[in-house]
Image (cartoon, rainbow, N blue to C red; front, side):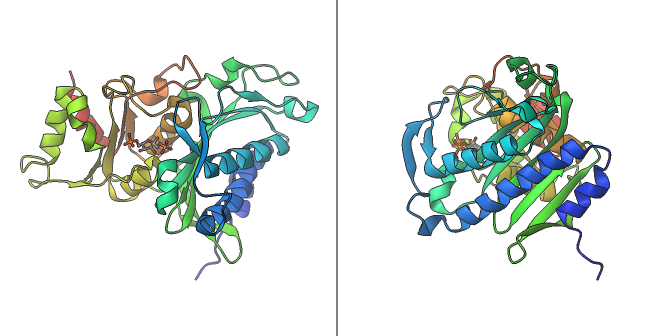
Length: 329
Ligand code: AFP
């Protein structure tokens, strides 16, 4: 059997021309490795499980682990020396790092430290999502809002960590998608899923169907199509909704499927955040041969107007997303 390739060796070989990017990925690896351990021990650690007692900027109850994760990733980016600023789903505003070394950094990172946090206390898969951009502002200065509000097409790297039955890090720098699994004995990620490809078509659809009467009628027609005998497989697709976007996306990446979070009455712009959730996974989807849209336009082309902007989201196997879009006027 060939020797397993560690993520450290992989980045050294594949990003040799960009040492800075290697530092960013190392920071993600280090924060994710520590966080994975916290998550695995969550039921045993009093300070980790349960609600924090505060709401985040979106008005959602923050979990203690949301803050543990947020602090871990912010510290890793602040200390890696090449990131000048970050924005996180958990914080009202972006953070521009003040040290001279950070101000000289050319990267910014946008991230959701712990997605699916309502699943933490019930031992269901959760994830971290990240997007890496080159700054627009000059190096040697503090990062500015404009650095954060770049369209997804400008991502230089993006990915996610899935804390599932194993911990996996999946990322792309625009040359395909590679997946790494955490060896919990050696505490290192090894390449386990080289050059991942999303099937063109799948049998899974994922949507919170509790919202079915809260969204545009055409979408109801598409879901009825998924459940009918008149679809491409001539039998109903399987509904799968974990409520952790990373986990739902990862399943669809491997098996084929579609995930939908449309505009609904309670969330007229959709629920998911363009910068921290939608753009990074859209980048991965496209790199793997899939598609991500608002139902009407390509996610990566949306020009962000604000940090916590939400968008309707259709992501997954290309022909399934195209089919769903064909139902929308
Ligand atoms: P939380 O991180 O606040 O749990 O949100 C998770 C999420 O952004 C995404 O991961 C889920 O797919 C989606 O929201 C679940 O939302 P609903 O509970 O409205 O279905």
